[in-house]
Length: 303
Image (cartoon, rainbow, N blue to C red; front, side):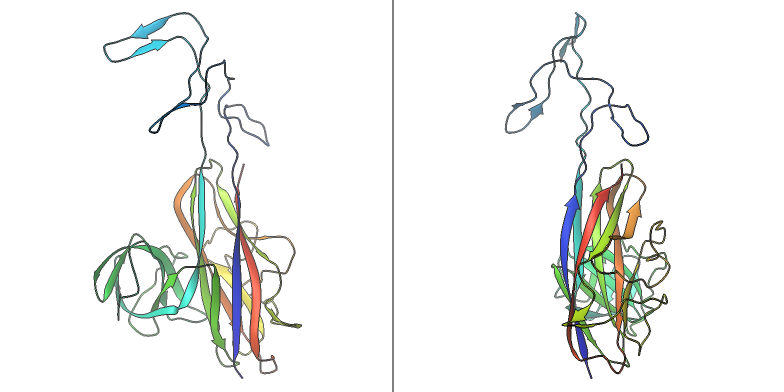
């Protein structure tokens, strides 16, 4: 009997607010302790925006290149967040033959282009070692170069035996078929650019269990998805989670309850990447067919 799992991903972003002062308490921060004193916030052209001000003490200063008149404007800090998720495209599988620094040798690089997010997988399966990065060049027909390889603390070692490279793209992911003697795996990665001083967390929210009609594949409960047992779970590449066990063991997503933390950072982070390694196993009595789940990954700035 063969089984297949189909996971649909959706995305929700909770964007940070903008603050302009430096006063704070236990539950807020205002990054500049002044208020505006007039002026025009909308002066602009096709190439600039000017936030001006009037008022303040009389006086001026000048040189051969500038003139400054009196007035004081509150500091402006436009905090930004950019957040994308990248599910594994199992159909993009290419065998990896070697890894040297940031250069991955593959049987063919024809399907990869600069800017692609990819996953490098050592010994694909329940104990696989994975890392993700963005392709910066494709120097030959059998190699790709990435900007970094972000892993879970253990870097992959590629020897050409059960090692692969996958493209991470799109908004849905179809896991490979699974039987009572095999394990199905997949990767969902994300990239965060968060100008948020207190950092951020990424949460996963399952709308439903992995199911086919009224037949679910239960969430793993013993910390390890095992071949021959009907169970489903994931583990995060972030090994420092404070609010879940995704960093230390295979953990279930739950169903329609509270979101679960799958990644976090403690400060401003640019090109910050993490991923979850999904695992599905089935017992001999599990009904054959296509199983589905909707997962929502939520970015939350920590203030």
